[in-house]
Length: 310
Length: 102
Image 1: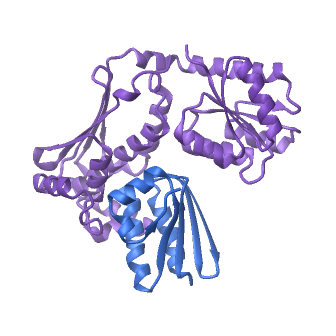
Image 2 (image 1 turned 135 degrees about the horizontal axis):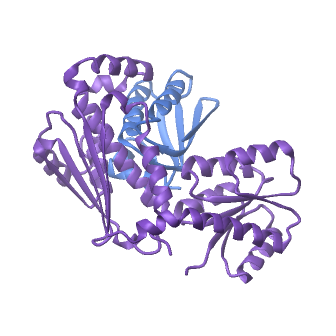
Image 3 (image 1 turned 120 degrees about the horizontal axis):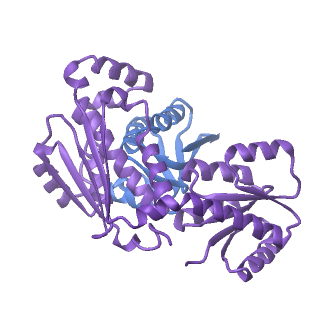
């Protein structure tokens, strides 16, 4: 079994040094950050099992840091907070933000190891679902979206929560996947389903909502559906995403050829979404007169411990 | 996604962290409108903690760019994350304004 990865965040060099020594001797793999900004950067580039963070730091405080972790990574990263005093207001805020545990300073080695072990144990119980996914050859999720309800939910958030709960995706890969999902489904909605003109896409939020309400009174539009499928093919190390709408399609062959010749062309006018998908995927294929788009992404390099941790 | 906006003289400083996607791009548009309606002549964008931007977000930025340079404004991305820098280079936005990497 791999070592548990910990990130310690504190502005005190002596605490970072002593704590990392204690935890390394206890068998953990330890990385350090001197402030919240550095810690957030490290989280972007590496997956940690647990973060231990001081509350009182200059710049981004422990609570600010915890909030950013929850905003950006949901509940996938556990955070234990360290503090010299347990002020009631801080405590309540931290609980609301989802702190996993608290450690009182000065730090007692046995206390912190107990807190880490119990947090990791809770995480493992939760990760039983990941174990299930780990042994599947293929995971296939297909959804059919009714345009009348599209704007009520955040597709990105739904997928972010599902992917963070069931797989241990590296942050960069997760971001790219979420942007792909957003591009594919949103384009199917505004182009394939609503057939919006360019000027209609830049309305204010309220203007857009009013237009949407109006468009959806047309039965031809209201009866359209968006089908989206998300497949992790563990055998072939491939991620496949497909979206299909009930619109009129477009001249995809011509467009794709132009895109291959010059990926950044006409960026000021249109086609940014397709350019972006082209950039983020390893293969892109249109069918059904352009109504259906399938992209593939090679994830073979992530298919061991990164996505399916032991 | 969080957007911080402050003004120093005629410079607007906008700092974004998180992902700009189709669901929150309107918030980005609203902050850009604040800049457009201010006396700012330069917009400094700090995208170091911005992990990605969807085409809808890029569209909002380009729409602002067209209007802003129309009144002699300038945009500079003072810092960007690797993914945003790569994206801006791919879409050739670095030909429209200066884009600095992290």
